[in-house]
Length: 351
Image 1 (tube, rainbow, N blue to C red):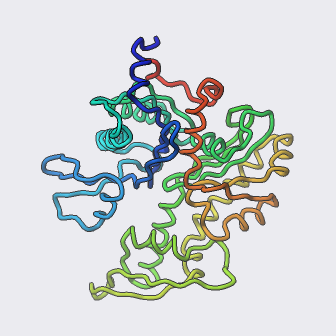
Image 2 (image 1 turned 90 degrees about the vertical axis):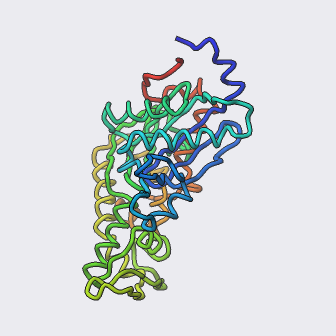
Image 3 (image 1 turned 120 degrees about the vertical axis):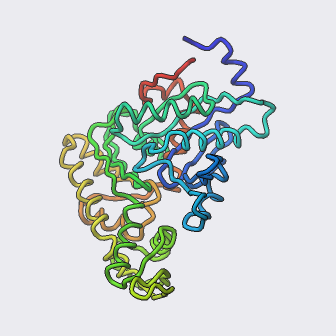
């Protein structure tokens, strides 16, 4: 049933598209574009249950807090692992979006990207979290479709488009036609797994204990999927497991390539498996258009080259791959009537 006060809420609330990621949350506001890009981290006082910080400020606290303060990542592998903290994080973002509007209780319409293949329980958790945080209506869209729309692929045409969205917690591989997913893979191997690979490599090769943020920094600075013409180097700082003292060593891009090779191989094998299951007519379209990479993992040096060599198909990195899903939710928001067919059925709609 349509909400009779919808026109009033529209006047005092923004329509919002959210890429609710394991590593980062991006918020698109209708008519304004992406205005929030923050880490999906919440700092909480365990004694009082008070939220102390959200986003970038909370991420700076990771590994640096006293015992009674914890920095929580409420999403694991793209799904909610801590419902109450996710709700608080969403409420914080809703309030930030509406801080310049004269409203005490914003009631936005919200589109949220979720991984492909999540369970009914996981999907419902996202909807209820958004409603409890203040949303008036909640629409859900599968992240591969949102990323493809954000990359400006013709997802509603009777032609095959292939998107590989490599995020923090999940990698989504999908072939899309006529507004739906024809064949796909959703892997819990992505950017976070590569960070873990680097931590394991440092421990096994150098008896060095690294922090999560240090591993991510090393990945961003020098990681590559293929050998680079010019080796990159950076310092690796942590705790010596033998002496317990601080230790610093210099590592290069070839060593980090070796560290993350297993995760990269899993991603490529799943891309090949998805292609093998794709109908021949759509494969012809993909060969013409190429495979499109999105998400932060698309920025891994040489990954597009390696996928192209392995699949014998052209590979393109979409413009600003980090924001593809958020842009996709925004494009749907801007033309909800025309693109409503790409949305998933949702319980909390038109309330």
